[in-house]
Structures are given as structure tokens and as C-alpha cells.
Image (cartoon, helix red, strand yellow):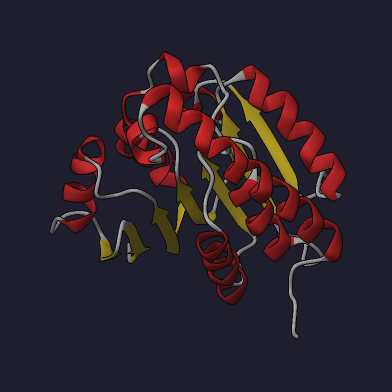
Length: 213
């Protein structure tokens, strides 16, 4: 079978997906939901504890990988790494091609785990982790950015977009997850609006936007 994800990264992905699946039952018992969008939306204390994986599914991860690879993305920015599953799928698309991924995470415990994960997967030359509030840590990220992934707190999608918009290249692909959540309504309204300078489509809970100008 054709495989574009390096074996070392695939091994770490398998481990993380297993841990995320095992984690779901514990969180169902604790807070009554395992829905990542619900937990991320308000940015409450439970999310700040950094205990929940808030992970993409294998299919979602492969989609991110395919999009980044087929686009030939060279400078990718991700808002909301959590424990790094989506980051690794993106990094796998960039590794060996000189591409760079800049990803963000606010919780210090998750950041510590992310550094170990990226080292284990052998992607430290490809991935830069920015710890802290993305509205601050992304302020100096260099453009042009040709792919932006939004998968952190939904209420921050539009502020993060607005911060980075001057550095988004024409043709930049923006992928926004859990877009059906109420907290992302302002972002969705903007990207669908006539003045966004984008073409946007929504498939399931995923919004895909292409920056025209």
C-alpha cells in the first residue's frame, strides 16, 4: 500500500490515537461529553487543565495531510495543537520538502508533551511550537502563509484570522474545524461574506476557504 507518512511519524500517530480513544471514556464520565468543539468553545477551566486530547480522527488527520501535500504547502500555521495529532499529519506532508509548520498551544503541560512527541517523531526540524496565547505568539510569524489550520478555541478563530490576514498569501487555504459550533459563528459569517476576499465551502463541520485576494 502506498504510504506518504514516514514510518517514524506513523508509529507516534498510532500511539496518540490509541491514547486519545482511551481518554474519551474518562472524560465522558467526568464532564458528560467528549465532543471537542463543546470543550474548546468557551475555553473553560477543564480545557485549561490540559488533560483532554481534543484530537482529530484518523480520517480528519489524513485529510489535513492530503490537503497540505497536494497544495505543496511550504509555510503552514496551526492554531491549537492540543497533543499534536493534527500537527504530525501536517508535518508529515512537509518533511523532506523544506516546508515549515508553526503550531500553537496555550497549556504548559500540553506544550511539554508536544516537545517530547515532536522529538520522538523526528520532526523538530520541521515544526516550531509557540507556547502561550496565540494572539500574542503568532504576532511575529513570518509570511507568506500558504495554509492556515484553525482548531483551537472557536471564539478565537476570527481574531487569529484577523491577526494573520496580512500575511496570508493569495491562494492560501484555510481549514477551520468544528465550524458548526455557536462560538465560531462570527468567523463563519465573515468568510462567507461578500467582503472576505475568499471562496468558502462547508463540508460537515469543516470550513474550507481559499484566499482570492
